[in-house]
Each structure stands twice: as structure tokens, then as C-alpha cells.
Length: 156
Ligand code: ZN
Image (cartoon, rainbow, N blue to C red; front, side):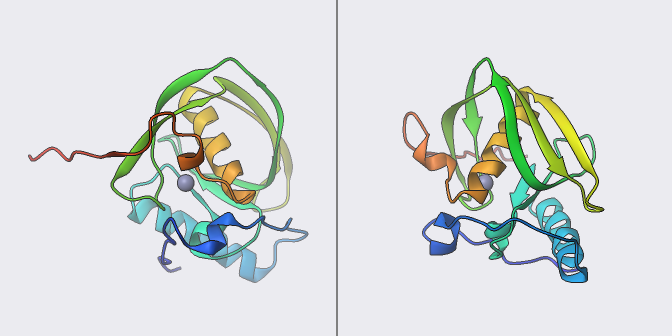
């Protein structure tokens, strides 16, 4: 496993649409493991493959409940609304105010290509929407209602 370099805003690869994954090859398995390691190393709650330079439809998410691997995720339902702070490992040191659904239901496959439907609320719903956007070449900065703000780090 290895920590991969995270592409930053302005990198053209972040604007591209990703391709579906047809089977979990050893390379895809390695990609998924590296994405998890890269996300944890960067203290993120989610990471999409294009952020490490790979145009495939896979994301990893961990909102503190263990890793979730979503292969070819697709939104089935959404409802409600939440407006709050959102950041991205490809836009370090910044955050924006973004409105997302309060609830989503998606379909996806896991790292063994097992089909599942997943429901998420609040932070999980936000993370899922954010990461699926990456797979279609979109970033939260396009949706930030009041531009980008600097994250202020508290000194301990
Ligand atoms: Zn992001």
C-alpha cells in the first residue's frame, strides 16, 4: 500500500468524467487500498479516484464509522436540504458553504463487486454527494454559496 499524491484544484484531471469499473482487477484493488491510506493520512472523510489521478468510478468515505468503498455509485433518491461547511482534500486550507440533500439513497458495489443500496443522512449524505460529484468532474467550489474561506487552525 502507498499514500498517493492528491491532485489540487486547477488540475485538469479533476474536471474529467470517470469511467465505470467493470471488474475488480488487482490494480483496482491496490487503488482502493491506496485511496483509503491516502484519505486517512490526510485526515479526510472522503476521497475519489480522480483526486489521485485515476479516472475510474470509485470513492472511499469514512465519517468515523469505518471505511465505505463505493464502486460505480449512483444516486437513487434524495430528499431534504442541509446547508453547511464543506471542504476537500483537493482544496487544502479552504472551506465553503454548500447546500446538499439531508438524505440520500444510492446504489453501489463494494470492493468485492457485491451490490448494495446505502442510505445516508447528514454528514454521510453530504460526503456521498461530494464524492459522486468528483466522479463527474465537479467540485464543491462550484456550489459554494459565498466563495471560499480560509480554514483557521487553532493553536493548541
Ligand atoms: Zn473533494
